[in-house]
Length: 122
Image (tube, rainbow, N blue to C red; front, side):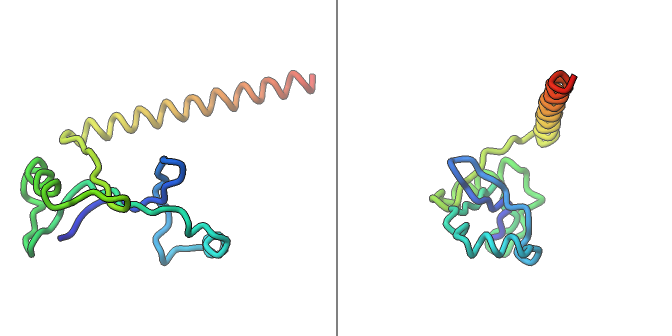
């Protein structure tokens, strides 16, 4: 079985997708590991099945692959089945809107910090 998903370290119930592949680790990453970061629980968040029993199932409708995945994958503390939308384009657009909202809030926060700093100096 070949699955598609993301591996994440989970701290305080909020996943943080691991940004570096194992071969791209920096000296800082290795130092953090030696300092005890290995205690962070790692979870595989699975959202699709690509191959099963030697068969390439990517051409099958997503709804079928999802059903097969739910029948074959048993969630555990280290493997979680992620809910995914059938309308990938709409899901992408929703993510893009959320990123824009986040950037806007960050920009507003930076602007108010600059204004407050200017008032203190002035």
